[in-house]
Structure formats: structure tokens, C-alpha cells
Image 1: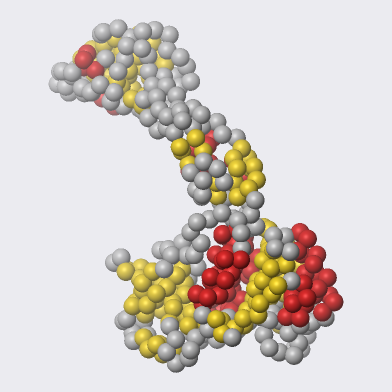
Image 2: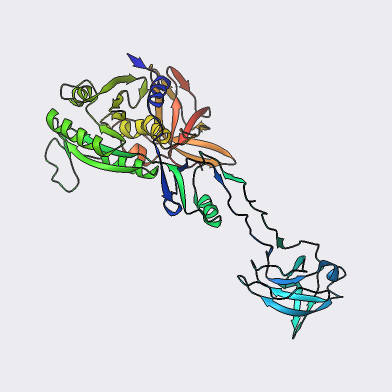
Amino acid sequence: MILTVQQAEDRILSAVSVLEPENRHISDSLGCVLAQDLYAQECLPPFRNSSMDGFAVMSKDVQLARIDQPVQLSVNEIIPAGNVPKLILQSGQAAKIMTGAMLPDGADSVVMVEDTESISEYVKVFQSVNSLENVRLPGESVKTGDLVMPKGKLIRAQEVAMMAALNVQEILVFRLPTVAVISTGDELADLGSNLSPGKIRDSNRYGIMAQLQEMGCQSIDLGICGDKEKNIEETLLDGLLKADALITSGGVSVGEYDVVKSVLSRLGQINFWRVAMKPGKPQAFGLVDGKPIFGLPGNPVSSLTVFELFVRPALRKMAGFSALKRPIFQTTLNQDVVNNTDRVNYMRVLVEKREGKYYAKVTGPQGSGILYSLVLANGLVVIPAYTRVKAGESVEMQFFEDAL
């Protein structure tokens, strides 16, 4: 049975569940998703303060201040940030004040230092101000009891800063998956070893672990397993004890030595699919003790592409994200492309943005073993089955990283 891309995606996403939440210190929460609504226990800012270096004044005292007709006020105190004003401002007075410092009682505005001239114990004001000008009010940003961040919110640097500003030290977040990764095949050689005849370097495992790192997941390196069923089974079971999910690379096709299929079948409910896509037709997916197992193809381009289209969205669901897939854009293709097959073709392209529009250039030969085609690319274009696209026509695409 051959599944469509949508069918495979639906089956995978319906099978995985959000991981249980955990408490994390805010300094270790970046990239996580909130598992609770966060309400402000304090207001921000907590007091009236100056948004400028300058002089706190009564706005009525400087209503007529002009460049050619300055208003002179006596300076009654200096208020650095972090200090409490000692005096109540009276009419005809000003207090020298620093950015962030508490406004003294009696003052209702701040004149920027650029619009003043200090002379001994006096200040000349050359610019009028309105009431509350250059003043931050208590609760202006957030009031006590406000919903600051809803459950499901992605924590970025600005969310970490806001939590710190509100005296939040620990927060409940959905746990990011830990994923065990293994490459299988007698033909594989690891880094640093001699490359004897018939052997190839194992690139998939390192590429997959990098993809996991890019999305904030921890990976467990299970290394390379040859085509011995006993070794593969022992390694997979060890990985499942430590991880929330497991990714295999290779051994899910129809070859005589693709023994991963038989091992996975014994371990749990695993389905072996042929998906109507290129690259990445042979795949496996299932659950062992409730943990998802992703069987990726052995060809490097297929492996990394299948991760992008299926594994990444599933892991994002496990981590509590609501937006699971990368955004889809329209791009103009630079050449004629013909897809005469019954499979969707995901072509590697280099996309540039010119005058607000995207333009895609195919990165050379598109064989599933040509890893360099991915190195040159920053996105994938989607060529549906039995479709002819002419140069200059628009097609769907997605980036491997943030959009240009």
C-alpha cells in the first residue's frame, strides 16, 4: 500500500502525544512551550518613573518655555535610578532625574536634558512639556492579575526577560523530547576510521542529531549498528529506555539485508510504508511502549528530507507546539520541471528574495544520494505528481530555516 504524504503525516501526528510538563528555571526555558497560563503577580513598572535623563517638573511651570524665552527653575534635588525622592516638588522647582528613577511627588512630567541648560543650582528649560510627558506610569506595561502569557506560548528571549521583570523564577513548560538516533548498515564507517573498499561514511546520524539540536531537542547517539538483528535489537531497546522517541536510519526498504524491519516488528506496533514522495519513499513508523519510532531511509537526502516533513512536526507536537509545520510560501521557479511520476517531488532549491517576491533556483542533480544538493539549498519546492512546471511559474515551497 502506498500512502500519500498527507495520509502519512496524519497517521504520525495522530499517534504522538504531548509530553508531560516540567518545571524549569526561566534561564533554562528558552525554546520551550508554556504549559500554564502566566498571570502577573506584580505590576510593571511598579512606580512612576522617568523615561529620560532630564528634569522632573510641574508641566504648568514650563508651559511658556521657548528657545528664545526659557523658564528658569531651582533644582531642589538629584534623583539617581534606584533612589527614593526625599522632597516633594513645589511650583518653581525641578529635580534632576535619571532614566528609570522614581518621579518625586508634585512632579507630573520630565523635560529632556537636551532641552535644558544647568546653571549652578538652577536650570533653564527651553521646551514645554505636557502632563505625563516622558513619564512611565505604574502598570503601564502589565497590571497585577493580567494574563501575560497564555498556555502554549513559545518562550523566546523577550518572554524570559518579561518573566524576570515579573519576579518569575520557575515556570511550567512542556518537556522537549529526548531522541535516540541510530544508523544501521554494514557499509557504514564512522568518523576517523579508515574507509575500506565498499564502505561509506555515516552522515545521516550526524545530520539528524543536528536537526534535533536545531529544534531544541536532546539527542542520544546510539552509534552505528551493522546488519546483525541481535545487535540492532539490543541497541534499540537500550535507546528506548533513555529516550522519548527513537530514529533509525537505513534498513526500512525491501532489500534482503534490511533487517531493521524484522527487529522493529518484534518490538512493537510498527508500520512500514511506501509514501508517494521523492525522495523518501520507504519509511517506517510506529510505537513501542507508547514511544514513537521513526524509520528513515538510508539515502542521506531522503533521510534529512523525511525528518523535515514528518519527524520534526511530530516532535514539535510532543513538545507542546501548536504550529507544527514550517510555513508554505509561493516562489517562482527558474527552469522547466517535469514530474511524470505518481509521487510528489521535493526538489532542493536556493531561494532568493527580490522586490518582495521569492525566486527559486534548483541546486543541480536531484538524486537522493547527492547530499551536496542540500548543502546548496535553503528550501524545498513541491512538484505534484504528473505535473509540468514551466520556468517563471509559481510553485509551493518551504524553507529549511527562518524565511528570508
